[in-house]
Amino acid sequence: MTETKKPPDDIIETDLPPHGLGARLRNYFLTGLVVAGPLAITAWLISAFVTWVDDAVRPLVPDMYRPETYLPWKIPGSGLVIALFALTLLGFLTANLVGRTLVQLGDHLIDRMPIVRPIYKTVKQVFQMLFSKSGTSFRKVGLVEFPAPGMWSLVFISQPPSADVASRLPGGDDQISVFLPCTPNPTTGFYFYVPRKKIIELDIPVEQAATLIMSAGMIQPGVPAPNGQPGSVAAMAAAAAIAQTARENATKEPAA
Image (tube, rainbow, N blue to C red; front, side, top):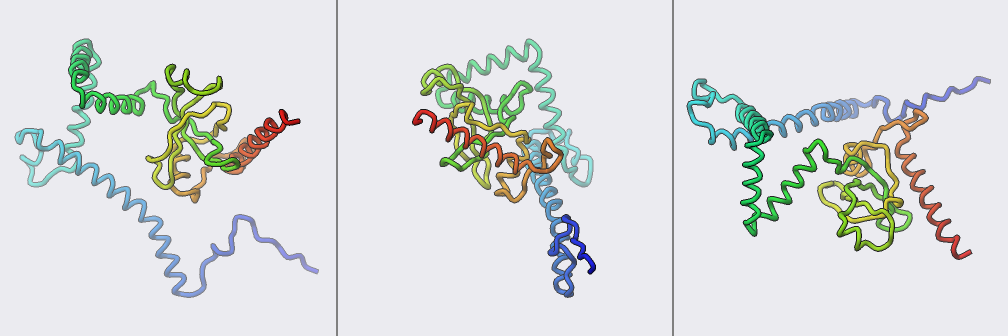
């Protein structure tokens, strides 16, 4: 009696080439769409950004310094190059004593403007956290039991609360602020404080967590587990289950 050989696990029956001509053409079209779609969208976004910067910077440059003044066509990206050079020069001038003095003078003047002051300070703090070398916001990803017991959500771990806020938070636990992004738009969500011990930190980059949220779970992170198997999602579920079991046991102990 001959033994039937089982096909390898990495071969899926639905992945085999279709037999009909129409099915083959549909498969080829979808394959080409998957290859060309991301490239086209990426090129369109880059082109739109470069065009937007060029249109914003070009009116600020005198005609004698514009490349299109001496050439029969416009050079795309010339405004972006000028903007990068100007920002680098501004950073160089700000790094010295005179530049820092001028920046402090400008901040002092803005502090006297009632409506402009809160907007400027908020935007400045956001830029400092995002682009400063010492910024530590959103460098870790965690799991929080939210919105109900047994349901776990991905959060981006931010900064500890200030002394004034921490003194008013109930309990003596070490609190941490987290941002829970929404699907599929991670720029919106919920910001709240949670005890640090109730967060399960995950060993995945913030970029992969954002991709997981934007794709509604269709694109799973491929970070290999400690045993070498790609089971990061299973590891997250296991960690959440262990934390939930420990929490239930801690709740039952006083009753016993």
